[in-house]
Amino acid sequence: MTATNITILDTGFIKPTHTGTQVATTLRSNSGVAFTIKANSIVPNSTLLGQANPELSSLTTPESNVGSQEASNIRIQGVLNADNSADRALFMALWNLPRTYGYKAVFYNVDTTATDTGTNSTRKRDHQLVTMLANSHVDTTEPQGDISMSGIIWTNTAYGSAKDLTDVYHIHVFFRSFTPNQSGGKNLISWELTGLMLPNGP
Image 1 (cartoon, rainbow, N blue to C red):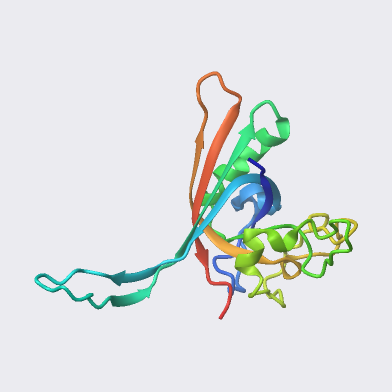
Image 2 (tube, one colour):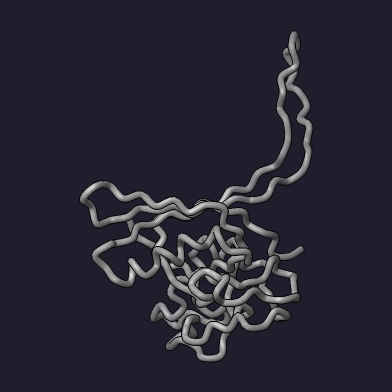
């Protein structure tokens, strides 16, 4: 299975529109520094709260009772190699994602302005599920500050030095659980993240 690189940033803000106090880096996963993981599977879920109860003694199709939209869920799965020091360093960053207060920005780390010049300069940005989920809601302003990602975002030929969340298609997530699994005597640690996707905009 081919893995997809996705980047996660613990913003330290309670919600995307919040411009209040950002929590200290000591209270953010990976000290508030964006980190990239290889995800084997990314599964979002969009549902409507409703009922489709059958009507007894009737052969006609029952009407559905529609309530409201439920919060969209997302599940991300991957594998860490315990023999790899970089993978081992990512473990606590993943572990702390559900244990910190701020919302997490999840994105494919290629600039929104990158264009395909025929040399894969966009690194297939538009083929990524995370991009498809986020590309209709691009944040054009950054009222929250201190979420710079210098050296993280690819811009056609190099990683940009003056970039932030306004430069990438991203989704907002509150992670609810991180579940690692290591079988006895094995160096591979499979893991699963689950969370709620927050609205990206109107």
